[in-house]
Every structure is written in structure tokens, then in C-alpha cells.
Length: 608
Image 1: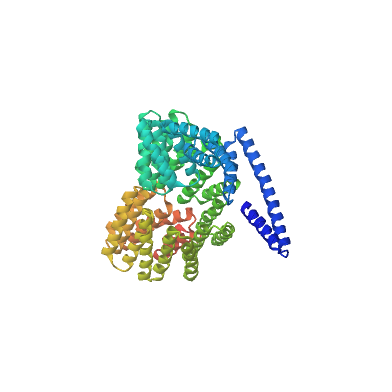
Image 2: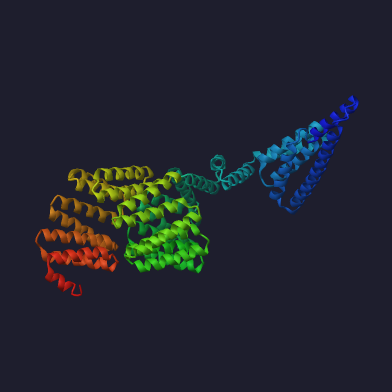
């Protein structure tokens, strides 16, 4: 701006010398305007300087630094900045960086300030800066100060989300800790490095650093400090579906938390142990641990954690067929999330409550909840949740055998997943489309869709998804009469179930082989498999699958002309379906029994 003013003044003098009076008024007007702007800028500059110095004197160094650095940036936009003023601002910024422990930035500003003072020939200030620089350089050689500077820089970068840059600083810091044999500092640094790897989804690298961190803390007998990194190890193990190892880490954390009587850590341990049991289908133990955690969370009024546990309990109640208990729990969780302002979670719970109403036979209530949920998701611009609700609506129409409507809705959901790149949802939609074709008898097309879902699940490392898709592929091959191929599918699924280590997977795998032997007409072997599955389903309380197995067993006994066992099995299936409010499935059993033996039918169902 000062350069522009000088140009206008030179132009004015030239015009006067040449006798050009026409343009002089315009030039004078521009000169006055620039002078006014300069005066205004000087006033703003002085105000900024005064405010920054005030913050500095009050000890608000970060606030002062923000203003000084803004003033420096503004000054740098000038064509010919005032070197003395520029040097002063750089000097002040250098002092503040030093006060904040950021030696590198401080030295950088001091060097620039030194150049400015040299330029204006201020030897005294140049000498003072030179001495300050020498002191800082000596200071920087001391590992303690280098550690402090690196730690500040790395932590700030991490907070700003600049993870690659933060990682470089933490690794440099790690080398210094190792050199000076500061094991406590090394453990903290390893935990920060692990956190960055975890946030970047590099779980193997994160795991390696968390494990080393825990080992150091245990060697230092800092057991309480080892709780958080050990918790992260357990979480990663669970993500890798190694539930046994994850449980070991959670159990050790619980013992440590109890030793130090840290109620918050005790609650967290019970919470995660509950999750482990839930993932393995051991619902009674999951509920037991959730209730212990819930009591402690309620004492400390941790409503966010209470909401998470109540939601998980609702999921278990749903799996156990306790649909009314599940609805109550979902309602409680929804109210808590609403109170906490977590509208995305409230929106997500529409899915769960809608599916329960569907299971209770209230199809319209379920569809209305999904529609409300879709509106809610649209208001929040939450496309993933909108896609999920559409998918779930599609499954309702699929169950009602309205294949046209189901297909239309699945394809709408697929469009959203293409737009938002949500591969997991896409895989489930492929399964939904595959289910439509399977029920319509388009087996080759169905097979293609399920195979697409398997590719995605395998890429995501989602063993549970691969298992479910393989089961469907096996069923399609059975319907095609390709028994050997179906057996290969079920063997693959069984291998996955062994890795998943949950009892429910073992039971589902047995049920699959029961289907295989039933199709192959090896009825006695089929019965053995169904009986094995029933034993587990009863133990882990999975009523819908239990009823399915009893129904299939009943049909086999009928083929073997063993009516006594037939009646016993299908009546059990009927009673379970009625208990969990799956009346349509129960009705089909009742209608078949009426055709098989009217006398027994009247004895069992005198009111129908």
C-alpha cells in the first residue's frame, strides 16, 4: 500500500511538471484514499499490538501469539515492510514461542528478527538476538528441552488432525527416550504412536506398539497406567474376532481396576466383558456383566455409557425373543441419546424398534417407523442411515413376498451406497437382492448377488458377513441339486465358525449340515445335526433358530412315519414361535398339522 502511495505521488509531480491538469483531481483523490487507509491500518495495527502485549503480560501466551503472528502476516503483504517493526514483531513472537517451550519455532523467529535488525543497522538489538540464539541452541542440545519441544509439537499436530506429521515427531521423540533410557516417557510415546496408527486403521501397527507399551508399564510396576493401552489391545483383538484373547486382556484389566478400586475402570471392564459374551452369543453372562457396569455408571451419572449399555441389552432381549423388554430398552436408550443431543443415534434406533414391531406382527407400525426414520435421516443429511432404513424396509416387503416393492427399495438403497461408498451396506443389499431371486427361483442370478456380497465381506475382513453369505450360497446349491458344491460351501462356513469361536456359529453350522443331509435324504444323519444345533440354541437362548430346527426335525420324523416324535417336535416349534410373537410361522405349522392328523389337531387346538 505504501508503494502504491509513492507511485501516485511521483505521478502527481510528473503531471504538474508537464502541465497535465486534467488527471490531477483523480490522482489527488486516490492519494487521499490511500492515506486514509494507511491511517486506518496503522490504528488497527497499534490496537493489535496493544492487545497482544496485554495478553502476554497476563500470561495468555497462546492468545498473544495468535495476534503477533497475524500482524506479521499482514506486514509481510506490504511491498516494502518496515524492517525495524518487522524485526520487533518477530522478536516478540520468538520470546513467546520460547515461553511455550517450542524452541524450534523460537529459534526460527529469532533468526528472521536478527536479519531485520542487521538490515537497519541496529547492532545492539542484533547482538541481543545473537546471544539469545546461542542460549537457545545450547538449550536445544539438552535432551530434556528437546523432549519438551518435540512433545509440544507432536501433541499439537495430533490435536489438529495432522497425523502423519505427528507420527514423525513422536518417532523422533521415541528415539530420544530410548537414548536417555526414560522408559516411562517411552511407554507414553508408544501409546501415542499406537493411537495414531489406530486412527489410521493400521491395526497391526497399533497392536504392536500398544503391546510394547503395556510390557514397559508392567516392568515399571505402573499397572494402573497400563489400563488404557491394554483396553485398546483387547478392542483390536475383538475386531480381529479373537474373542478369547480379547477376553484375557479385559479380565486382567478388571483385576487391576479392582485392585486400585477405580470404579470407572471397573465399570468399563464389565461393559467390555459384556460385549465379548454378547458377541459369542452367551447372553446370560453378557446381561450379568452389563448390569454390573450399569450400576456403576448410574452411580457416576455417565449417561452416555448408560445409553450404550441399555442399547446392547435391547439387542440381547431381541435375540432372546423378549421383544417387549427390547422395546422398553430401546425406548430408554432413545430418550438418553435425545437428552445428550445425539440425534444420529436416535435416528438409528428407529431401525431397531421398527424391526421389533415387525417381529411382533405389526407390519404397518414397522413401516411407519422406517418412514419416520428416513425423514429424520434426511433432516440430518445422514445418507448412511437413510440407506440402512431403506434396506430394512425392503426386507419387510421381501418377507411379505412383495418382490417388486422390495427390489425397488433395495435398488434405492444401493444408489445411496454408491454415492456414499459404504461397502458393508452394499454387501447386505446384494444379499437382499439375492434373497429375492432365491425365493423367485432365479437361482443363477441369486448366486451372482450372494457371490458379490462375499467379495465385499472378504475385502472388509467381515467373517460374520462371509459366513452368512456362504450359508445362502450353500442353500442355493442344494436347491440346484449340487450337493457336493453345497457341502464345500458349508465346510468353508464351518471353518469360519470355528475361527469366530461363538457358540451360535457352531449351532448355525450344525443346522446347515442338517439341511445338507435332509436334501441328500440321509435323514438319520440330518436328525443328529439338528439335535446338536438344538442343544446349543437352547443353551444360548436363540428361540427363532431353535423353533426352525424343531420344525425341520418334525418334518423328518413325518417322513420316517414316526408321528409321535413328529407331533412333539412341531408342537414345540409352534409354542416357541407363538412365545416370540412370530404368529405367521406358527400358523403355517398349525395348518400343516391339521392336514396330517385332524384328531391330534383338535386335541392341541380345540379353539381353532
